[in-house]
Image (cartoon, rainbow, N blue to C red; front, side, top):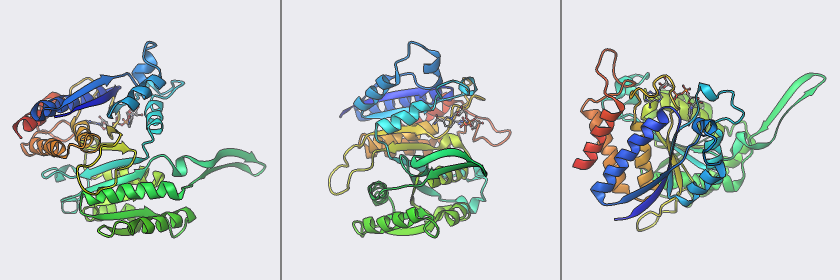
Length: 368
Ligand code: NAD
């Protein structure tokens, strides 16, 4: 029996619908396992741009710092495409303020869902991998970062820079996660060309010495991109820098067939394993999809990405592994019963609403 504080930031469009679904499932977990999830919420993204009374970003960040975890929906939409402050600034600012350097994206094909994949069924059977992307360094943040003009024309530069400390901590996150799974880590780099990747690989090998029970292999990013399509089921935990992770995690997401199914967590690392219950870590949890303006407000959104993000939160930020397992099993159960939201339903088949899918998962948690 425990009490946890969570900050809910629904954002815009279907962000509101799916975070509400995830909260409903968390409430059911609370009743079933006798935990209390106390939640506060705040406006972020487009809604906060529209509402002059919305709390300033610093206030939302302070609320996030006080909470045990943050559940985020999605932000943005055509209405704010030309706004002077982009709605996405909310999420980028929070990740930075909370020091969330590890982005964790599982890609799992649930039994019976192989048909939804654009990749041949026999290749995606049993896919259950996790991509860990370094989130606060690398090419997107390295200096120099600028554009200039010479007599010969325009030029531009971005730098892919990593420090040993940054590589060490993301590697440890990968190895710790691998210890909770099948103890295999694939580190992705471009060590045949880039100096930064050669350093990345050296540090990965150094960290591996502290984890003799985990197997480390290295893959070049270009061949990894091919293998993710040709034999995705052969991977377990993959770890990579910011840009490689940005690209490969979207590629891997596509093989599941629907963006609506996929959760994510951004964490300030994982505590070192070794005896006893895992210490909780601060994290921000969100489905990987956006605000889906084309279906917003129509009860068509697939809530499973947000619900699975809540399961992640139970596991990593609240240390409630059994409860997380029950939510994951309830999702699997709802899919096994044949329930499909519109994004998953084959042409001509009946689709259930956001609420019906959520009810089925909540019922599964209740019955566990
Ligand atoms: P999107 O993910 O919102 O939608 C892409 C397609 O997938 C749409 O057809 C949509 O209906 C469908 N889809 C997405 N999630 C679904 C779900 N849960 N259930 C059923 N169908 C779902 O991507 P987009 O259309 O490129 O972007 C729309 C807006 O969202 C943009 O303003 C974009 O900037 C923003 N966005 C925000 C985030 C975030 O907040 N993390 C991420 C991506 C995009």
